[in-house]
Length: 97
Image (cartoon, rainbow, N blue to C red; front, side, top):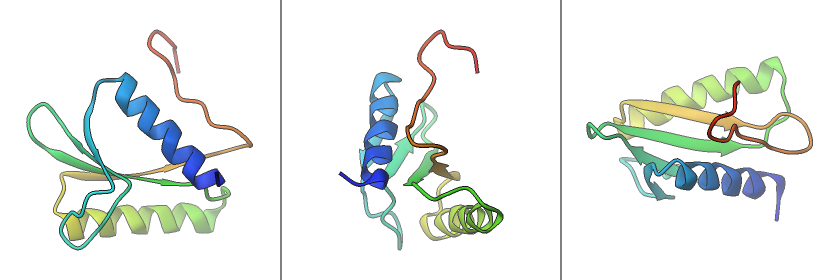
């Protein structure tokens, strides 16, 4: 597995454990994000996982990509999940961030 596919798997595990409604790699408008989350009130949120190294350039790239996903998909929101460091860890239920 690549670092990016590891991150996608970790995001999917987190979504599944949180019992969030989602579809993996759907076609949404003119896009194909990693995940499309549907909230309880029916809003859709595009989620894309990127294992980019942190830098001002990748931060700007993530912001640009999130805006583009939101525009092209017409979703309520778009999130780019990035990894920092050699491993990934999402908070578990009861953890304090």
